[in-house]
Image (cartoon, rainbow, N blue to C red):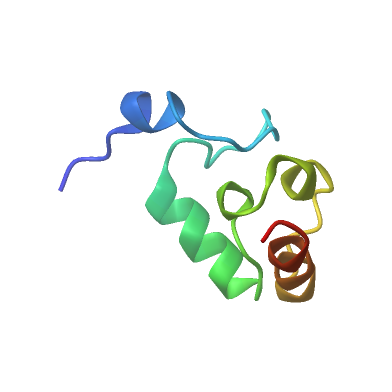
Length: 66
């Protein structure tokens, strides 16, 4: 399977521009999973901008945006 980084970047909502994994979803997911975190693309815009990728913050963010 080829990474479609260019395509992924067209819809990536992560605002952390200096991330080396930006647009490489498989690496991003693996990195955050290893850190017991949730990737920024699953948060609301406001939740993503907090840069708090914790599971507890993700749950709060989802509850606020129901």
